[in-house]
Image (cartoon, rainbow, N blue to C red; front, side, top):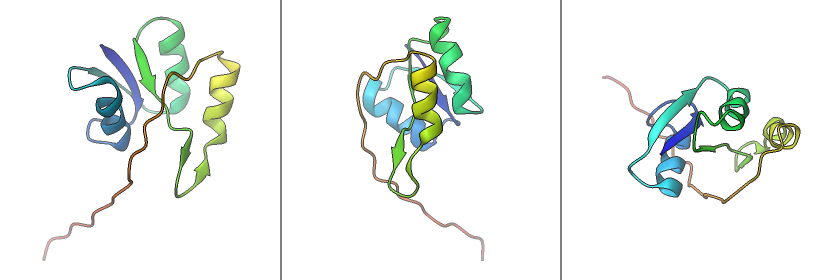
Length: 90
């Protein structure tokens, strides 16, 4: 299954994709959320993960707009804890 995400392997979107679709997915990494609707509407991907809200910034209005203007449908939700870790060299 080919799944579009904003970001790269190892990102929160990647983790959400694995959580929702399972381990056997192939990622289509996108530079921005605005790249995702075209991939969906041209059948270049089987599905996508697109954040619409997070606990730090709240609603992501741009993504609600993309869903509406490109006539996309929401087929599920994934709730992930956002855990950030700081690493440094001595």
